[in-house]
Length: 64
Image: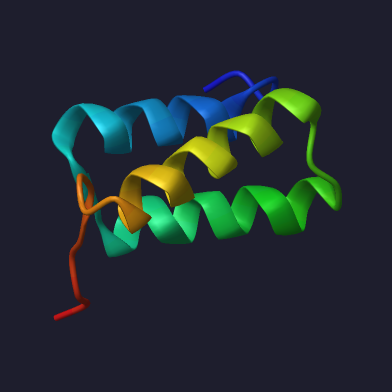
């Protein structure tokens, strides 16, 4: 994946499948750690993800 907007792409995937899986969550966390900062585009994507989760439209899938 391209490093520009990778978090946005992961959020788009989450919105499409309507589930935040442990794998996607780990990929987001790893990318944040790797970059050490968050772009405006990625920040807005994460805001949208949190909004959708708060509204109950995205299911958090527990780790097994």
